Amino acid sequence: MTRPFFLTAVAALAVVGCTAGQQVAPSARSVAPAGATLQQPAAVQATPEPTAPPTVAPAAAPAPTAPPQQAPPPQPAPPPPAPARSVFALSGAGSGSAVVVSQGGSISVTVSAQGLAPGLHATHVHQGCNGSTMAHLLYLSSVAGPSGASSTTLPYAAPGAGWTVIIYPGPSPVGRPVLCAAIG
Image (tube, rainbow, N blue to C red; front, side, top):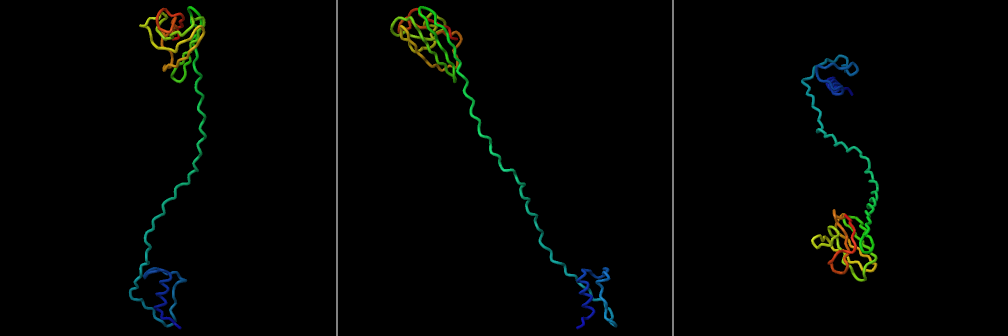
């Protein structure tokens, strides 16, 4: 079966993708059968190729991140500072000591006395060793004689300047102290 020349030329143009007026590669040219006259086809309309809708580039994947590193285990808290301890000798009619321990914002005052009269003895913190009620600062737990001790915790970080521990001759804070020690 022979095809008309016109169809062969159009098919050749479609295969090559040429439009009228463009050069066709020698291998793509049609050869007309012998005795055929070549006619220019009426206007050949090229059909535009359908265009694909614009594509949106996919969002870039986040860069891989290193796996979270485990935090090092917490270090144990440092031990609290050792309490500050001071020992003060009581002097007067008898003997003894006042031990002051400062720790954590408070002080502990431990009073030990020997050579006292039997019974309770009022123990205070004053300014000076004279026992004046005008110099009174704080009450401490009483000491029992003839030998005894007491301990009192006070809400101070350290003893104040001029503080003294005094022990009275009896259970009331009257009379001249029998023992005294400067602690601040």
